[in-house]
Amino acid sequence: MTQQRSILVIEDEQVIRSSLREFLTDEGFVVTEAGNCAEALSLARQQDFQVAICDVRLPDGDGVQLLRKLQQINPSVFVLIITAYATVENAVDAFKAGAFDYLVKPVMFEDVANKLRRVYQFREMFLENQRLRKELSQPQQFDLIVGSSQPLKELQTAIAKIAVTHSNVLLVGETGTGKELFARAIHLAGPKKDEKFIAVNCATRPSELLESELFGSDAGGPGALRSAGDGTVFLDEISHLPMGAQTRLLRAIEFKEGTPSGGSAPYKVSARIIASTSQELLRLVGEGTFQEDLFYRLDGVKVRIPPLRERIDDVPELVDHFIAKHSRAMGKRVTSASSDTIRLLMAAQWKGNVRQLDNAIERAVLMCDGTQIEPKDLPPDLMGLGQPLPDTDDLRSALRHYEKLHIARVLKQWPDKREAAKRLKLGLSSLYRKIEELGLEL
Ligand SMILES: Nc1ncnc2c1ncn2[C@@H]1O[C@H](COP(=O)(O)OP(=O)(O)OP(=O)(O)O)[C@@H](O)[C@H]1O
Image (cartoon, rainbow, N blue to C red):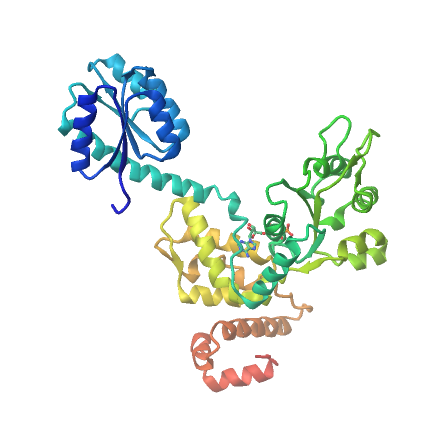
């Protein structure tokens, strides 16, 4: 172990304290001594000790209470209690208070050494466990934007610039592109990152419920716009916001004033609003279902989230990320995807974008028997997804349609025509002929 092993010895009997210090120092520990509770607490506030060895009876208090306080100051300190008698009651008291183990007077060095060995073995596990828990409790990995394609890099630069301003933002992107993830990223990179982030999906609530969830009501809660304080309200799928709510939202943006349902007094709105849409809002303005004023208010700072097919280079990194996520959740040992699998995944359409990829990998991890995902583990319909149906009932044309789709897919997966021909079980010249006949653009 490279890190210093630090021990606090709390014992009022000078002889025991000194002999413990000598022994422990010889064993390679860095030892600090305290003769009573007050001294121990003051030292513990200044320095993190890994272990405390503490007499149960001290001149200014009892060791069990001291132990609780020490663990409040530093939750990862391990405590060994020294008791006068090896009685069951003494041991139970010590364990109940959170002691790791106990030592009986007269303290035997061998006993101390053994118990410290166990402390350190356990401590390693404990710290590792804490680290993993911390990793797992990262709020749904939302702050982790995976990918390093050029479009994603540009997006992140734009987001970083926008985030610092606390201005309202409109995120435009197809479903599953990560709009909520980016909304959270903007919030977290902004000046009010410690304030609340409240997400409200405008597409999944009946309008009355949505309005009171957003603006608050006399009978219900305060509403997201008020609860968020100086933080952020994320309005997912804003195009579904009913007309009445649009008027109220416009008021909240223009006059910074929220109006609760039920007629109670207005309140001040200071939250940042990030709205998202997968639909063209301007078209909805034209159709009369979205208010023009609100559109211009929101459209000021607009960020387009490109669909996954426009940043296909992100696929391998996303695949690794989702494999790790689902493997961990399912307790499996899947660690990677074979290069054939990656090739297939990079050739797919991804109409459902990153969310669809996430789901595909979840299924693949489930199906996978070994440690590496193979094409057979992927959802069977993956390659056909998003492909248009033939617009005719004529069988010959339909076959030609599928032939074209199939060859296009194989060529995408195997750009080397010799390899593609082999996979298709066609001669190379036949493949060239098909490419020309079917009008395949490569
Ligand atoms: N770049 C990324 N890195 C890691 N995870 C991502 C990324 N983009 C999206 N995801 C994940 O994909 C899933 C879908 O993302 P999110 O819910 O943010 O999409 P959305 O655009 O808001 O979808 P919808 O329009 O359907 O509400 C989430 O689990 C999200 O964490």
